[in-house]
Image (tube, rainbow, N blue to C red; front, side):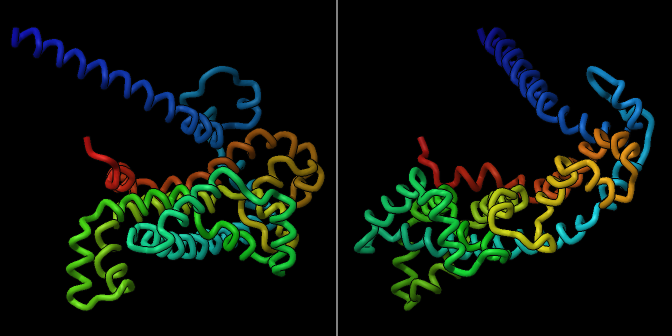
Length: 294
């Protein structure tokens, strides 16, 4: 009987590992395909059909063409500003909001929680939001991409749940020792929820890095375009304009058009992928730390 259970356990373990391996390959292969294609010879790439397991030839020309586009480095700088300062604003506002919503002794505790949840399902709409940004004088300002998204309600709820799961005796002991709310938050709560904070930083960084729609609405000055808008220009802009900005003639631009698409995809995703290994170990722990234990 024990032998049968052991065999069934081994077979189940192998089946699970096989399944997870297949899922990993299915998730990883599209990225590998894009990387291989970005280094391939453009003529061979156009003629190729089916799966791709290695570069077709090898050339850096696609990256040279993409990186020579006017404004791409300015786009990187603008995006770095948005990511760094946007994430700082997000984390400060989220931590303060989550701590306040976790205090059940606060008179408006239930009302504020319902109010924030309400905003997850209903918004003011695109046109009223644009009018608000315009009246605040934020049109053509990078802060138009930071202040309207200062708090993500879902992330706020995750952090609030984590803080609520901490023993109330810790806060009571700190109050007996004379600590105020600011001291409790900074010296007691924040160190205990670092895994969750790391996950939220990842969420906010990825969100800011990939964001392009608000920039398209509020930013008119091309020198303030984030990277995503610059790459969008390369991908879908008028062919003659793109060719002149890169320094190619139309025949060359048509030749490298497909290759440049893959290269711009790598340029846009590679920096943010480099962040994942440093925060991955906190991911599951950070999200599940405040979950209900069964």
